[in-house]
Length: 490
Picture (tube, rainbow, N blue to C red):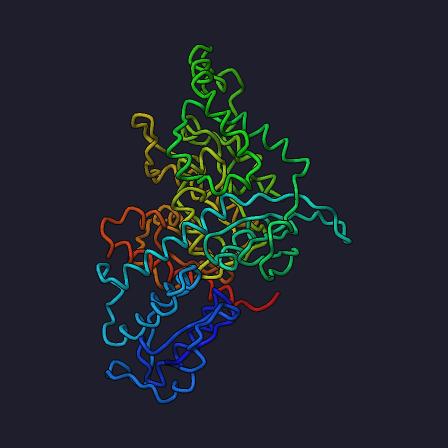
């Protein structure tokens, strides 16, 4: 039996090197053990270690050259973050099988493939929960007069390093630390770093802002939309002890029925369209050639009052772009969805969550994200609002705003997520299937990468279609990142 020691619980590079060594030595999966440094080892490991060089596979599954497909590498990087002690052995077994069966990962009924995908799904869910339930607390001012923020979180798996880039992008202007019992992440405004796990006693206590946050949370709590089972599914009670607003939930739930009745008995509110009728109708925006904006804040202020097409009437609000105003990479989607319309932020719904996970996977740490159309277009269906694709005319109306965003951000690479984004960027109709996979030169300074919208993955009907769509989008994001990485330093 051959034993390999890895430096960390999420040490993908260490596992990859150990797997390559084991494979080149002809070791079959049942003859290989993987350990994380510091973990309790079997008393027999030392006895078995001296036999490693003489232990050869009894089968001929190994070839001289080890081949790992791109989708397997992506899956392995996710699975190594799981807390199950057999994750490394599972991946090595799959890697050995992959040498003879290149289509192994497409066989979702295979026991190993199914288990690996279950692990990956649990990792993605844990990362989603970390993004949703981290709460920063102000801890003071540093020597350079920068506010310092610290958060405590208790992940189920080893996801701190994989999830930290999301917080680096979202809170780029803050200096923060996220402390967990499975490792810590730190951002000083310039560099992301990691340190060993700590105990909860190291976490800060409440700060003054949390009283304001609790007041805000109580005011936006809608008793008419309360579904306790759905709420506890999305916000499991294991996270409550670290959420400042959680102390309010039992009382809010208890009083929900009374508050709902008060809402029903009160006078109806005035729809936004009716309110706007009492105001002077804003003039239509002049042509782009007649107006210029100095900053994104100035653009977004004007954009929030846009009435150039009827989409503003049923929408909750305008959804502006978000991200670094100096980023070399810009991602353009179609339009806001239901969650984006309610929160006023782009790509925060299911498709957005998927996109952010894929940006993390491709190690894209800095991007500006926006949409071709700035208002949510939908059709009501009962209590739900169902997405409806914008027309060519509606996209063309919004081109003024998108062109202004592009001028202000001045990205070197633009990713068009879907056909609507293609039209918004170029002013022309284009098919994703014909344009994806190769960079397109918009001018001498900007290159365009066309790919599918992440919502197409969610809409896929079969596991095979979903897998293909996921790999295509992942490949195109890697292409965009490679173009950015190849840019000469400014």
